Length: 134
Image (cartoon, rainbow, N blue to C red; front, side, top):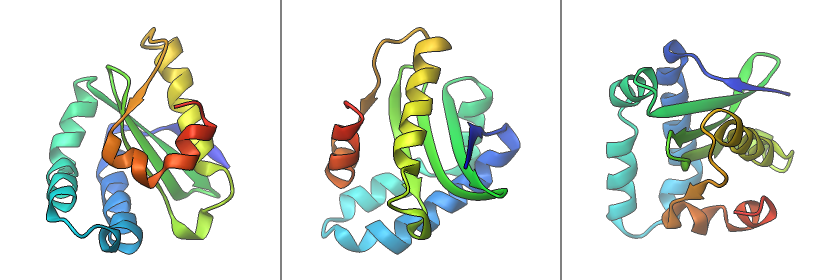
């Protein structure tokens, strides 16, 4: 398993990956359309590509033999905005490794001592976030 920062050219693919995972595993879990609307607006690939280019967003990918199996995005203020792992790769520690990697990046590159996560996402990933100290 290799985890690395994605290039600007890879952001659109990461967005498509996240949308696919959201539709497969998460969309059906919410009864309210508010979370769906927020997700759909946030996952605008052109906007996220621009944010990465401007240094406002960093996205890491987890790869298994060059196959993208997880993504994690964080703002330059240390707010984790996305964490998605393909269902075929769940329970292998990929989400935890991605979170550890963005925390190291936040500390070493951004000089931040902590990161944060949206409450909406915390409900979905509660045990994982708790095990990572978030």
